[in-house]
Image 1 (tube, rainbow, N blue to C red):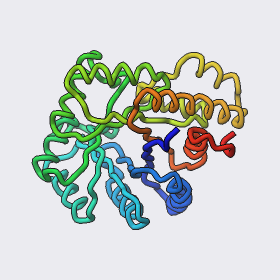
Image 2 (image 1 turned 30 degrees about the horizontal axis):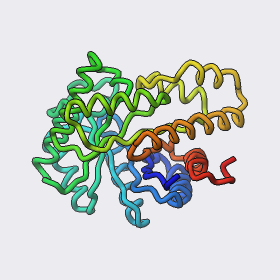
Image 3 (image 1 turned 60 degrees about the vertical axis):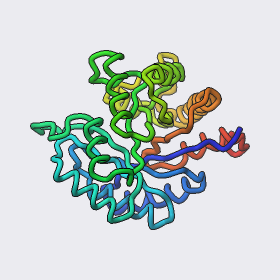
Length: 281
């Protein structure tokens, strides 16, 4: 198999120890030669400085960094300021999202949807940024219907998105069906598959509950059967996720975006498996 086109996501560390652990993980993951590293944004922009600091550090190491930018809770003026700061640091790639409201927060902000944010970024900065947006093969948890969700995605593309990254999923048919459905709406941007390695059953269940990602019953029951046997969970997770990646790439997915959780081992093991490396066995 050819080397897949991959990108890797981090979250901004909250402590000096976390920052050091991320540096070590990033050094290992850089060996996989990802296209770029993205860095998430807290609810309502709560980690804005940490996001920028992490992206700048990634750039100083000679890699491409892509900050996430959320519009929820922000004003046009505040977002304009963030865009100018990104430009001043020669950041050329970003992930534009509606984002989540922090708990107890009132209004949604002046830009209500990711499509509004993409349109605003293009109006303010022209073609300066390569803009990634989110895609939901299993439907956004707050969408009214699958058709509404597809239309919302198409609006982000019409507003000027260059490419998309999906929410993670474990059913490849959901991804291929989504790609086919948006193609019928005239969408032809690359839709990169978001990949969540499986290393911890409880954590995976919690994340999936929050974001609306479905864990197929056969995977859920198998993971539950391992109890606290973390080695078996990781070995089974490696088999499942590597197999998923193989199907996606064979079916024409333009790339894989790994949700690394600031860890290197699981993503590296999947990548090695995809390369047919004996060290991944």
